[in-house]
Length: 220
Picture 1 (cartoon, rainbow, N blue to C red):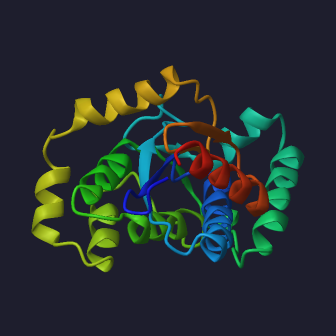
Picture 2: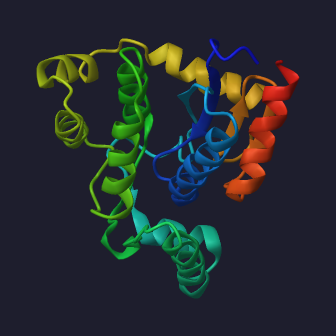
């Protein structure tokens, strides 16, 4: 690949998916490894929406009862929580599932990410949303909470509130989600490297790095 051309990695994810947080950490470690061998590489991350809970109302619903029904009992829920905690601990991620009270519809959060990406890299915002979900128990379905988080990430409050209160890009975000599913995405996180290779799941950083390098060779 020509060093002057950045490599785009599209990240299909949802901010209520705990493995998306781990996947992002593993991707960043993979990119560090790739840059040690290819110091001239430039990479652009672009987030694409995926709706894990599309049928949930904008007001949300109780978090734990939903998971108990989904997993088949409280013991299975706690086992799933512990599995994620164990995986995240290696990357300094402290999951506080007990603080999450509301299962949210993330459509507005995806709109906010889309809006932020129009002016550059949205990783700081995405990470802050993940922190809000998994470490602070914030309701990411609440537009006021989303605006507060975006302001913390240095976005202008009046522009955020105006956008979230409008229907701008509603159809576009829906279309992007349908497009990802049409490409074969069925779960998150899924990483699409240079539109040449798709990786499903929060893979080991070294496997990520090998995949990225394969795409670099394919594009050279």
